[in-house]
Image 1 (cartoon, rainbow, N blue to C red):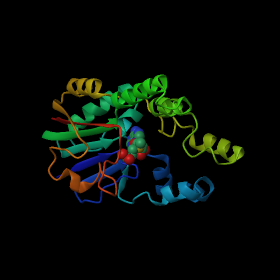
Image 2 (cartoon, rainbow, N blue to C red):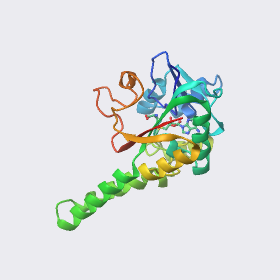
Image 3 (cartoon, helix red, strand yellow):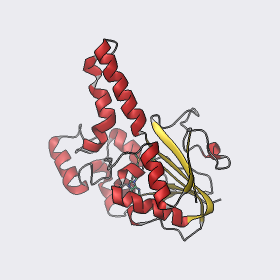
Image 4 (cartoon, rainbow, N blue to C red):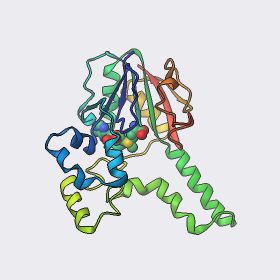
Length: 242
Ligand SMILES: C[S@@+](CC[C@H](N)C(=O)[O-])C[C@H]1O[C@@H](n2cnc3c(N)ncnc32)[C@H](O)[C@@H]1O
């Protein structure tokens, strides 16, 4: 089996059949002989711990430029919470790339934040505020769950550094969008199924976090946390076949 874990972030698999790929700034910094010397300036405390925990088994590649594999050479293309970080037109081209690298019958497993679940949770909380069962002063959290990562300008974790350091970081590393942190679009079971069908996939199916047609999928642990529970709540899990 060849399984691609695209936009892996820190969630890498160690199984021999999984290729982890990412393009985060910190990963590129870590791999650069010159830039790695700047790490003590930019990453301290929790950020430094995250930086240090970036695995060595990650291929550095910008997926907006395609998937670095030959036609029909891969059994599974998997990505979790990555598609929504691509511009919409890039995301469409990326789905076509996924189809290209998959062998006939290969599986494309996608995990994205589920716009439907987020909207339902927001509306339920709104109704709760109206009926007095929920606290209005907490309601902004439900709005944030929907919009914060789209509207965010400052990169996460930059609230604490002193203003001068923050400015310097933004000049050198870019704002949240440049660092690839922001959501460029959102998906639900209808628009994602449509986009997959348009890209040429068939048999698009919504599944649960621990359900898959990929043999022994849960053994790889990519959709599970350390306790074996759901790794990314409020997500949509979808599989499609080439
Ligand atoms: C929200 S994180 C998700 C990480 C991991 N898949 C998970 O579920 O925890 C999004 C990841 O996608 C990566 N990413 C975004 N755009 C990318 C691109 N154009 N090429 C490669 N990786 C990208 C980011 O670097 C980041 O690690």
